[in-house]
Image (cartoon, rainbow, N blue to C red; front, side, top):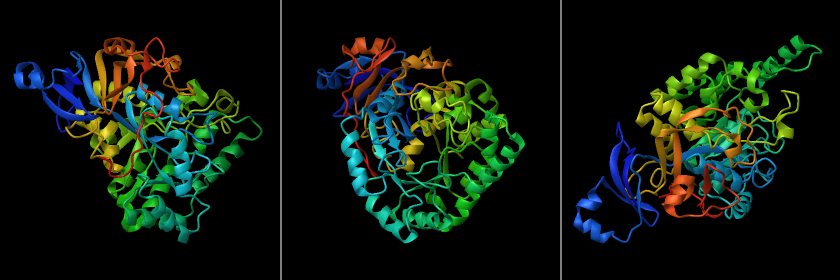
Length: 480
């Protein structure tokens, strides 16, 4: 296929370049100045049989990488599964996801569990995917190096918690964490941490409960029980325990500016999520359970600080922490027991495109790093993913910059559509998501141009899934 006359976001460039892109055998074969195909008779003859898509007026971005999703399979598929989760990812311009180890039964802490998970999701994924391995509080410190070594060639990192609400994946203690940091460093894999200090949370929760007395819990009880100090204290503790191995430490879903600054100053990496950039604790009054995550969104000024840190490169990238749930788990009438999670993989790229790049909070280079390049580098996928370059996979998103996107929950393809992003109108509209040169998601307009028919299970008045379940490819560290 030749994608002709498209304005492409190329690596290292400050603005878009009008180009033609040749896709061959799932890879980008070449990128040339727009019109080269028509002007050069040799090229015209050589590629005369190729399908051509005239993308005049459209922008081409590298396919987004969402490096933090909970697709819950196997084990918690009443909330999400790989088929619906990856369909929603494709709808939102995401071409690669990295799935967490903790929301599977069994958790991905052994090669056997990983292969069992792979045998199930391999027939369902619509976009490319990788896994994280898990390190939890059930492991003896002396066992952790063997766990890491046994999984390292099949995963792109390891996840642990300083506080966990999951009986199947308990938090690690200081000794376990230190052992994990050393073991991950020896295998050259990042150690991911949910960084909230359990002691700070316990004290804040007790204080809030004493103030509340016999009154029913409110949303203020939830977000004040997990204050900014919990993130800051956890990051400082993690940096101290990691010691000489801090460059392998990665802090997930950071909502507090001081936590991100502390991590980056010591050489650790960190991510934030779209909901920390879009919302703050005052929004619980409007959205309630639809906004609940752990950690919760923070004070209003933190949004501006996180945007600044992202623009400065002190936040490595943005992830969704996709974690939907059914209504009966979200709307419990008790803020403290309502399930915490947002189905965000479909809104991640559109939100950052509109409110980051188009709103001029992020330069083009920063936007590309936040949505694709940063995660590709951190998780060993850069040789094959993360930018529009000859030799890499033809993963790209076509965007119409002159139209807007209305975030209608009825258009979502995930199992859950309970989201605080509902009703937003964003600049730009995704026309197509291509994975290894194949169109996985197409707008109604693009599908007609490609003469494709929809999979009836995933289509609506806006767009449709064109790939078959199982099209997604399993990726490991060093993929090219």
